[in-house]
Length: 469
Image 1 (cartoon, one colour):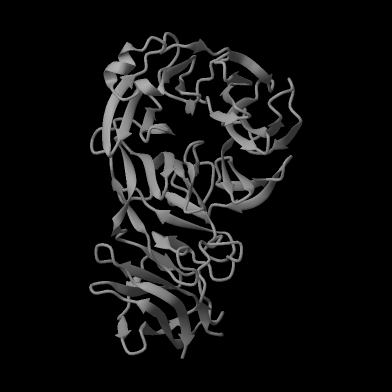
Image 2 (image 1 turned 90 degrees about the vertical axis):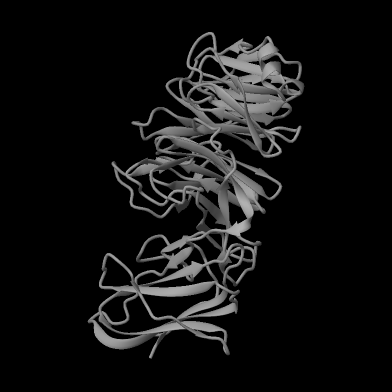
């Protein structure tokens, strides 16, 4: 078998058995975009909110005054973050329906947010203190018609705020006139996600979690009916995100990603995982963003932990490189199972992430003073000889830098064993190469490389290879 060399690092493979050239079965907490052709460790997410947050926030607004408003999905609480301080400023008490926030947006000098039955608003000039929220007299500003229990997504397009409400799209115009039914997409279809597209609005829909059929709809926001609608054989279009000039959609509960061609959703990628009726999850409508020009999204467990959960990237350094997927950031709890990523907001190069881990909640911020501790990659299965024969194999990494107290450690497992075994790793400082050798008699084997960091320093690897000696 020929030697294997990775001189580019092309993210996650589709499975343990197959992937694009230079991809890996697992790649967690690693940075492959900052310096094309090199790999190092990403910054960590550190808890930013302390113990203030007491519910999963699936809605966030980055306000023009520099603050951020985080909205509870369940109990009506609203927190304001300003200069790193999180303050509970209000608890929504709608006059009808559930209190959890299902959508929010800043528009024309106001913050609008939606609960099941009511559309609420407050002037931006009033959001600084809890007393100002209490004193303001429009917490139940308008009433929805359908009163959808789960989704009221909001997006601004053509100088108008559009809001999903079941099979209706409501709107608020620049004169603050509210229209409860600007578009009727016809029940039982419901609005779950929205995205501007050129001068139009793209509507992602759902019927219910048990119905594997929905529609993607394109509407010019002017006429009383839509211009395009195409069927999608998934149980809902969960979220939209932009990848350069391409609009992507995450649909269904089996990790599928599509791209929108202007009328239809076309096949794109699937998040690598083990998907079944008991293993599923999704990307919530506000758990998407663009960080350093690269799309990111947070995957949440529905049941069974079908894949690792955290913040994925799906992009490239520039048009000259393939757009690849990798698991870049883990929440501050340091786990990748049984968690929810509620919402993402990017402020310049600052990344904020809301999450839930069982009964614990928080908001993390990207920590530029500390690398993530625990980054690693795993190769695909390697089958040097289908019959299985003994041979000596060397795994090595050429490094650009290896700062003090950092390291790269290799592991292996053979014949589909459950656990990796650590190898004796040698640092050839003269040639700036780390390597380990193994004489193995196996039909199939797999390697793992673990990066050891020192606070904000980490190895920078420029090539990874496997030699058959």
